[in-house]
Length: 298
Image (cartoon, rainbow, N blue to C red; front, top):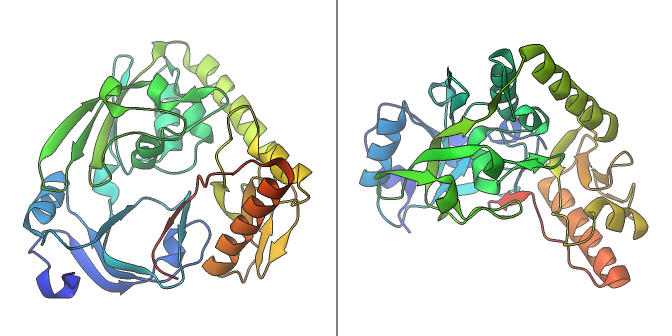
């Protein structure tokens, strides 16, 4: 495989070699990126993808709210979209948001504009790009319910438009190839009074803050809910609430959250997750599937 430092194409954005990643992810653990690339804009991203060697490894990260970077770091080039990709524009009952925009910012902008239907995004950590990739949702709503289309750039640097119907959405998943990088989304809601939208949004936020360890170093929901079951309930009933491995712990507040108590390594968090999976399988015969994305090398 081509070493990134040997074959980086010229760009208008920035390259950082050996860039620390632990401060960019919510768990606050993990090794560095071999190269971190922040593109200047979508055209710059397309230029990079078109010019890079085809065997150059590329990993895309957002704000790291649902990401575990392993302790050995991430080989190849890590792409993180900067503020230029975070613009939000309102057009009637539609909202166009860059992939780097925070989900919460999209929800607040929609509320201020009197657009209903996007309130749930206020309770979804992370960015619009990550929400598209995993069909993020909470409290009965998902991205598939509000998406009209999204703009993306594929591994060859070609621009693409994906309609909601083409995304192949399912529970916490979309069928878009992994080498496709989302750069923008177009959402549609319904007209309502801004005050009413804000009230519903704050109610959802209150439910989240009252039931989840949002002030801790965590990665959000760790495992997907198996069909017909709640992951947190299975984990709790398997006796895992409060379980520890090194500096990692199953949250006492919400058992589907793993937290870094202060000095955890990525290896501790992943080992704890695997121990939880083993105990749930042993007790119930159900295999929990990771919702948190794990990247890099041990």
